Amino acid sequence: MDMLADMAGALGLWNWWVLAGLLLVAELLTGTFFFLWLGAAALAVGVMALFWDSSWQVQVTLFAVFSIVLLAGSRLLIKREREDAEPFLNRRAARHVGKVFTLDEPIRGGRGRIRIDDTIWLVAGPDAMEKTQVRVTGVDGATLQVEPVA
Image (tube, one colour):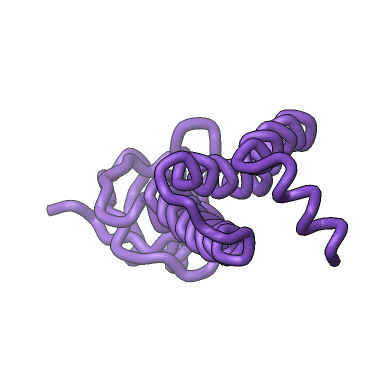
């Protein structure tokens, strides 16, 4: 333990700059966005060490706190961005609710089909003739619930 303290003391504030550089290189090699935040925390402690003379214990504690805050914040940000970017991910049918489409085939016995872009969807609703305009009112599994547009 004394050896680490001596080494940290010998490098002074440069140890945080060197650690930040090593962590950023590790990020470039892995591309995980994990080492990026650790490198940013080391960089922040290095900048603080320029202006505030503190013991190595305080600096290590600050590094740990900054690392935890940056990692937790990045995970929350990434989670929110993913939800905003694709709100209907894994719920493709839900994006069609409220839209109007034209039946490709008539609905007989409560079942029919419509083409949306390059996909044929099963529909359920009241019987209707081919080329009838229908509005999607809901989703039941992979079946769209429809009703004729008046």
